[in-house]
Image 1: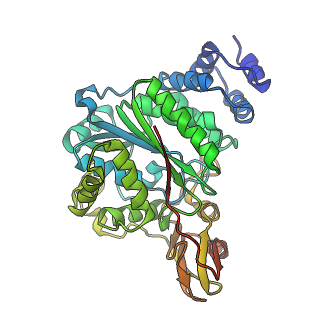
Image 2: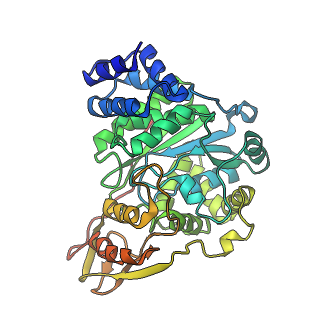
Image 3: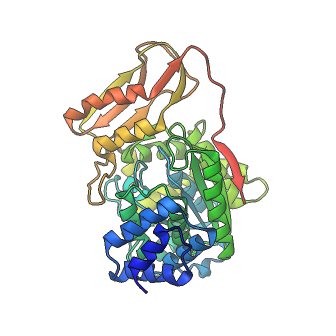
Length: 424
């Protein structure tokens, strides 16, 4: 068997066998398949797609490419969640502490920034002292003591996904539905949780731009998880505008902390609560989630996790955002905010240095955008609508991009829900 023939088969839209996919993934890990060959195959998959069976084979091969977490000692209390990637999406930093506060065990393996979306690891590591590189003993010790941990992939767990994840980021193959599904579900299967909820983003600021594509991805991932014996559900949520008022690594942590401190009148909490309710799947779930926030139990769990992973115990009492420069941005005219273009703001944060264009790029942790108004709000000309945080003075010109992300008109738009659909 040759990788050349496998690439050629997929280039010709042929269905790959379990053996062919297994050969490729084994070669990705042991180095016998070169990066340029994997890149070619990834592009062929992105163009020609994969069947549901091929996607299941790929998911399982990636999950089996390294070690798996054994969470059997915690029984059915183990939970996990994943987002397909959005803008201002910090739900993990809310859902995981809430679930831990409610007695669940949350062993979460997360990724770094991919394309225009931020990575949970990058966000956490923007907090002084925090590390997401943990030994197995430290990871399980943290689960035993506080019930939650968020760590990065090691080369021992899903090593194939770690390699392919980085290649996809720089080869324009991020948006392929089979590749997204296999990447997400291989990590979920390897991570060992019995109960999984998936947040599939849909809209201008998501990889899935329309509801049909989002439904396809959600259904594919749910079915893959169910076939592997896990309890899986998915929410399809809107991503035409940023989920949070905060976009950028340390900014998004700040936004999550505000919710954990009791700010529940925002879309970020609406979606986070819905994800928690789906995981709990019991009567009165919504009230339980509200109480975990109201009592401060979820914030306490998050604070303990940060401290356990290297931060000072009082880190949340100090400013989290420390960019070198900032500029206030004002409305160009009076009227109602019709929309806030999530993709335009995300691309601006990327240009500020808040994301990666190449896998070796360093991220500037404190750059980003804080929005002050949302869809439906009325603004007067010259009202402040956002603040841009940046480290390089020449980036001040990008403030115009942020201003242009706000569409303002005379008529007030109708209200929209951020939770669009549930897939089980």
